[in-house]
Length: 426
Image (cartoon, rainbow, N blue to C red; front, side):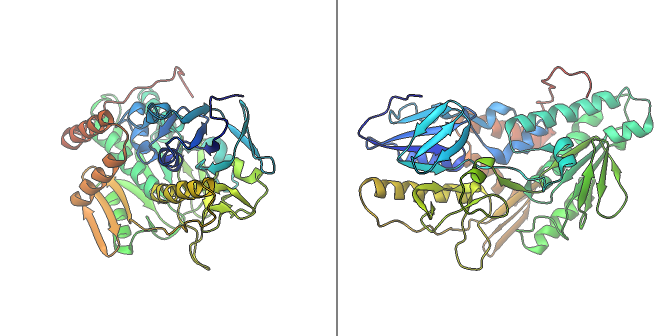
């Protein structure tokens, strides 16, 4: 494989075009380094809004931005659409599906994938929601369940089609449950004249005793209250899943739940590439890095974001797998690569600045915690919208998404209710 790069320049190869990878490439834009981004997709995905794609609020082109468009004016940044398969650490070669890519410095920013915690039956039958394709698959499936239910005369089978289970009480699970409630009870109920949509049931399952565990307890309680009382969501705490065969979800305790839809957001793990490196990882497969974000034994290899296990202080837990961690680490990573390329061994130490947490519950309602400040309700929802709009790529996307949010807030419109695959039945 060959790419047009300067022979005398140091080459930086970045695996992953997520928040961290794109940020590193932008910061390394300039005449002194050649940069190659490697990703199996040709787009950068805004994952925090995947749940809105899966529930028909926005379209895929509003959260997916072409990688090459970021760097149209950056002649030193190239893109390779390929799957990273392994790393020859001694010879400094990244092995990909499109051939070998030599590097002087390697940045692992490959993100994470869904963690089913070894439960194969659930992995085989539940829906993950980490990729664009998975979110579209959920949208198609949910809409198809209503199409099939509208002609189903078997009451037990129809109820199974209309039972939607979200597993995981973190931001994704809460947001999916709330958005499904809006879609079903606010839009779909008026469009299926021969279907009693009140039969539909949304269940949010969490293994511990509260939702949004990163939030203060009072905001967790408020989230559960809003979902139960205002969005008609059956919130089940202290409920751990055990098995799912596509028809019946069973728990470690309690009665099984008949359902054709289980959306799994109960955990993430690093992509499989990390386990092939032959270096120390944590339980989620994330590679352990030092305070300069390097692999201890291989200082020319950096890891950031969801695939890096960074422990700030001895005895503390690793930093969470959220976008602010990746983007802040990207700044330090890029700075340290520049220092090494210039011959300096004095590197910057990473220090995370916690920007707080926020999650939207439903239209006009959210919770947010930023240091000692807490918000809930409408103003938290406005703050959530503002933060996410700032992080979207491109003016067109900002305007389009804001427009859709505005009409959804006023009228509950969900114009993306289009089944895009050609299957008649599942």
